[in-house]
Length: 71
Image (cartoon, rainbow, N blue to C red; front, side, top):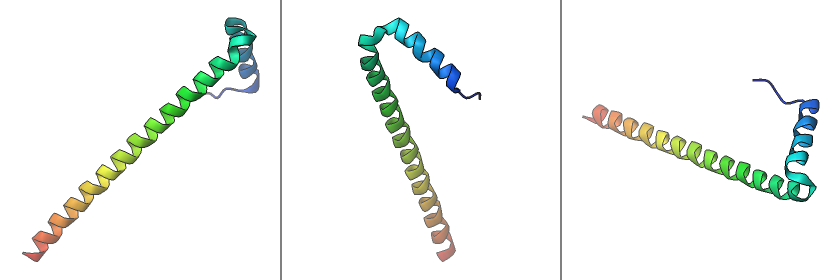
């Protein structure tokens, strides 16, 4: 996946400045930052949830294996 370099970043910022204007640009930047932050939080929660569920499944499987050994 190609990365965004400095020249590309400058072009994006100039386009954003033209589209939104200097007055709205800080507000738009803040909104985008908050949206990215919320996305990261949700992604981390999903990852933690699936890891916790996976650990619980492994623990149940190990408990069943121990029960079979005990019999």
